[in-house]
Length: 231
Image (tube, rainbow, N blue to C red; front, side, top):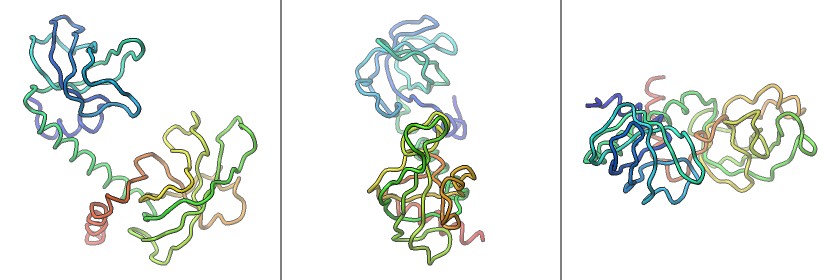
């Protein structure tokens, strides 16, 4: 049986988490998916499908919840198992997923130099056309509330790619009009060079996890309160 700590780690790391019935006992099992807990963004039609799971070891027929990595996605879907639990442990898995998410948010909060609720303004390109390097852009961020950092911050600049770039895969593209809670870090030197003036008030969104919906404000305020107590 997977213990709680290991389950939280699995829940935080596995791109695929789903429940289903094992229909064969081969090393690569056919699984009829009946419960989708998490799949990569944009993947539709996974529930009710039949997927191939490359098992860590053979399993008897029955219902399980799998944690898995993508192996082959095309006309059919195959995933490689990281681990599994019995099919009746769905609520335990969902609780582990909630805990792993809370842990990650706390980690990103701690890593940020400024955490604010606000909205992005007009996105302006800092590079012309489709550059060979990172397509840097800048957008003003109107601050409604500061959760970490100088309380008097009202207007800052955010540097990031204007569209997805393989040279900076974790960083999400800047989106005009996006209202969210932003976990901001120091901007990369390369981006600051493109910006020129105004460097001292410029920040960066390092990963998609550093953009959280406003509905999580209460949860993140609790994290902020815990950090202030530690300080």
